[in-house]
Image 1 (spheres, rainbow, N blue to C red):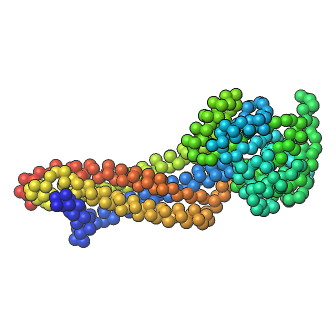
Image 2: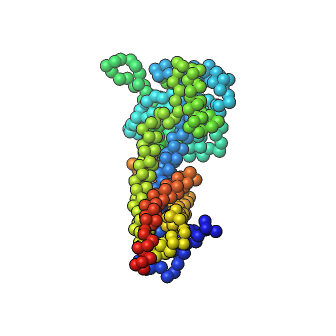
Image 3: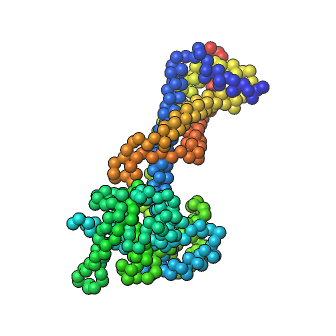
Length: 411
């Protein structure tokens, strides 16, 4: 029974309709401050998490999970791929290869430098989602990529197609450098057909990248082999990727094995840093809102001095008196944070399913993204409770320092 008394008293102090007007107003201010702070913190994390996940998905869709290469050297795809599929069949879901070259696209007296990526169409769908990015002609299945990308055809990005007014079936000219002299640049002309148009959603890809069959690429540049071997794994977690990288590196020490994130370290680091910095800054705002709790509880303690003295005279321990005001502060903090998280969840759901806020071209994506993860809600809720507890503990521990004799004599 004694253990229930502090909770009952705290509940009566919070919700009693005859409490002082100043305390009632201060309680509402504390509640709204924590609610708004939690809502702002959660919604910001939903958006920054949306940026990180959306950009990761776009980059991951066009890049393989793992890339194996030997800088400056060509690789034997058939030999290495056979070894990989034999020795790492439990980890690997798909194997393909690619090579990169730079050419100049010439069409209607307009030129543009183009990164030409040679791929193996029959294997590419097992390591990337390129087939799903093709918007013209519309792909029905990933298997059709090998039929679409025939010899002497290329896939171009949506923005490049719009800028040069390119259509499927149209022919364009590629200007390819020939290593004839160190002092002069010679270009040979090669005509290819636009087999399709893809759209990744990242401007640097949609404007500067084109795909071609790797056999055609090697023929154009008079080369053999591939620049890199690409892999898709059966698990996409970071720990699984790192474990597989370590195992492949030990098996092929003369080759370099990296994850797709290792190829874009600045982008990955900047997205993480942005999320952590925004969390820290807005957590400080939530802390400021929680600091109002100190004023509220000191006001409450001063108004309940006689009650505290009576409780002590009746034998209620200092710890249980402290718990009364501690429960008051935590009740306000918990209810306000839950309301803030609920409102943030509604806003996040709306932004996630109805992306109506457009972003300028300087961003990697065209709309304001939102991604809700349960762990983010848990982190924000725990962080808010911790801040509320810290703001509540100071006045709560002072409540037991009152002199019982002095209070009873004066009142």
